[in-house]
Length: 234
Image (cartoon, rainbow, N blue to C red; front, side, top):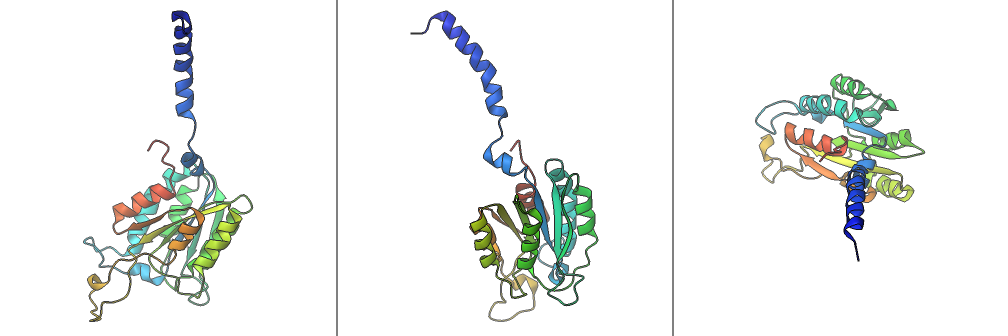
């Protein structure tokens, strides 16, 4: 049975402990502090327009979103960058490791994405592999931004299983205005495409990451904040 004196000491103890308990990082918070690689789609399809009311090419919205979020994320974690699409000797060999995770890289990430001139195909499996290799041996987080499907004979789900078996790298996938096949009448109106998930979704499903679909600039910003950022206070 507590005495008033004991109760008072217990209350004092709890007042000291409660701020400490709430200051401890959660598992989610700890995960968003590890090294991260952004894998950004620079394939030719990123020049497409007409999927929403603003009329901007997808690459322009991607640039705006990365410019806003990358500096925020870089305040809490080391960032690196891989792009794919332009610059290769053939359509399927345009994977580029810009740099491995390093401190204060937000401006460098944004500048590299801003300089992309979209071209080529979608070797997203190879690009994610390059990003995962850049995180080795400790592992970390890969955030893939893609507007489509693997088009260079890669096996994203096979890579997903391999990464899951290693257990060190989580892949988040942002499907940005991903579209499926034409409807039966084969109209050329871009509004006649239907939204779908990227086949790269298995990279997230297998490795414990998240798949986030984004159809607008605001949704892309939110998806990047959720996956690349570090929402310590959300």
